[in-house]
Image (cartoon, rainbow, N blue to C red; front, side, top):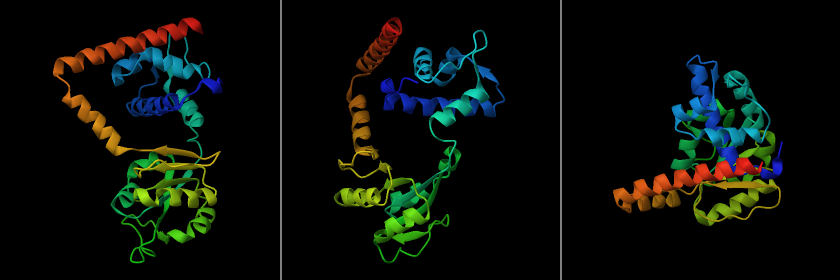
Length: 235
């Protein structure tokens, strides 16, 4: 495996590929080529082959990919063959909505605890039965519940303090929904979901004339194809 060349964008795409393969498996399909996968799910076949090539040889000439085998391989590569226990800091509307999201179980993530500093919430449970703990007990609950992923769903002003708490508790993977830049110590991965930036990017797209949107989309697609082809020549 060429670890030094694997970017976060690549691992993000692996997750997309896995979801696509899950859909095909549910439909009873046994094999698929990169071209068929790309056409059905609006992906790029060259990019698929390049991304998978970082991790080994998965396809069979003349057949394509055996879907069940590739699903198993991607599940292992993404670390989804082992269960992950999630703690959410912030039992407000966002935190409870995330806790009650049923899609997490399909990816082997289970929310086992929420944390908050509101005494009226502490000691209670969400609609799905997940307990809400005092935020000051993060370290103990993280260790008792074997939590390995934390989600920060608190106001921006409190986000760094919360990150410090979960890092002290030993959590090394953090998903941050707070609109604030956070500083993590070495060995801790923080991924920020910035809803405002994403919406503003969409706003920019909508602000462009229709003809300019189409031209830019075609130009970006052409550049991507050329970049992939050039990379393939160099490898």
